[in-house]
Image 1 (cartoon, rainbow, N blue to C red):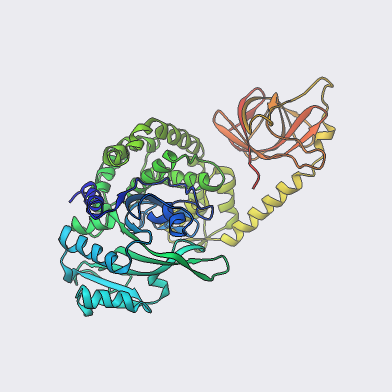
Image 2: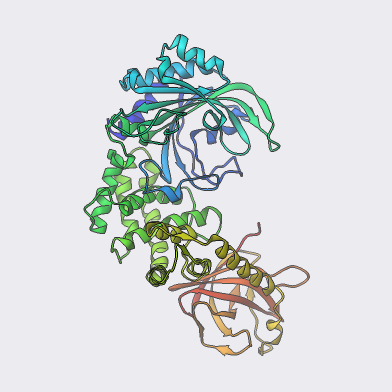
Length: 546
């Protein structure tokens, strides 16, 4: 059964049993500031579970797009190296808001798996929370499952919570047994992490809300939240052990192979690229743009990780954005909004890849030399920081390369170098060079910060920190820049100067402080990429306050 057919079959099964089919919500949670990304099907229903929102239905089903690449739920470093870790996945789910509870949830799940999908009961294993006598009685006495394929587990395995706060409760998990020819033991055993027993469905019995102090408050009405990973179910039904072998991924891998010139579809780098085009495309679709902060930085990390893996395969040209069309071909029917926004997604990825490509080769040369010259098994923290600060290498990208060489990275040294940089930026707020610049009395900067936090401008003058007039500044230089117009507020009247960034042609620069001298705004800038020249057209952007 194809992945698209499984998705339709699941939704139709529950629709026939009184569930409202609810479209996938955005990857950017609209109702939970504690979450970086939507990471489960129940996120869009959180307020309903808490009793704060009333819907026109009390049963729902959905196929929710999810991302786990930041915060508490972060699978990024394992993607490509294991059979089942992904940055993006789809969660099939059915939900009850104070309607049915444990008995019906268990009955529906068992019927769907053993009748609708035809999975043999003897290939399934069930677990419940150690204190959940009710769920155990339903499974053993009513569903009559084999007691030798059943176990009670502790809170770590069978008590589910969306995050540090919010809805939570005991759960019952259903595993598929791939057979004794596959390594691994049943849930709860010492070798449970093997590939033999794979969790395919989690039935969460929502009974509590966890408060910020850790206490559990009973929910107004006990509810049900279930989640079955589409990719895992597809792997079972298509008789493969790796999610990358299912039809959905095989199509992406084949197209990625054409673009990169690689024939081995099991290649780790190829798998990374196929996985990452999914998360990157859907994040952009949901309004996330590559940046150096928050969700935008996570997206930037994923894009750059994919591009680096392409570089490792020998790809020197821009390639990643070309796979958006492949993704639309396999997922556009289920998500028509992706097809509608294909050109937008391609444009954002193309621009981000071009920006990183300019420094990737130089950064990789430095990293490869550092590895070749290394005496030991740990990459120095100052090298990791230089790659991050000068060449835009996210730390996990450097860690990825180190991992491929069986090396570790000195995170303590990196953090120390980062703190030095932060102290340097803080001290910049006290700089007095602006007061000493030799400026003509009629010179002024058109301040546009009350209208917008981003604008187009031109570089009028560049000065060194010793006030020497310059025609340009190179990567790593810290200089003072005057623009003809600027959204950056200059320090005055007790309000600190704005920070942010400049983008231009083939480069970028970080604005670490802004001062005001008469009617002129003086931007203290560190050049990050490309040469910054007098006369250059720049796009300015002010960092929003935390």
